[in-house]
Length: 186
Image (cartoon, rainbow, N blue to C red; front, side, top):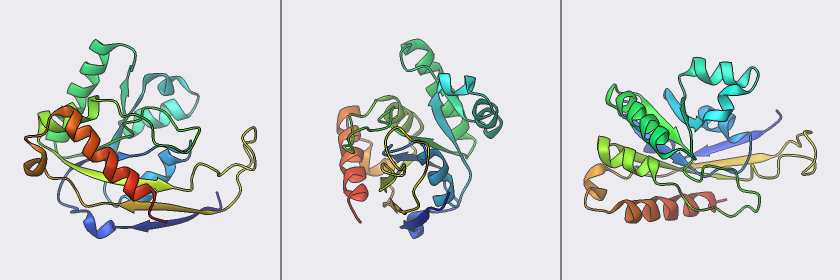
């Protein structure tokens, strides 16, 4: 795609551990950028309607991604339970807790599902900040990509021991602040 992907913080990843990888969501290309940045296998939790897209749906199903129905609480809980099983088997899970790409460049509010997943599995959370992927198109109505530098900053993992006494809202806010900081490190 002509992108110059610059990744910092790979030394924060213990390749022998599984994580819940959480990142902000700036563009459609984030789903390609994140796997190129993380040197270990993982699956993602992804909106269920994505599984209906031609080719992409087949690809993410083969990858092992977990569909989530964001507007159906019971089905969303089922998806989180499935992700718990995957984490307990030693595989990492990637989540973009905003649920949608930003259209303003500002990081939006975070959904709670990934944080329940973290608390239920006692998993460490690996925060990622993505910057400069928002403006990859020539203009907002175009699919033409303009080559540019995209930054990924991988933060220090937040261990379960350091957040076990947090409420879900406190954990959500802590991770959001870390991701905001990481995404502003240009």
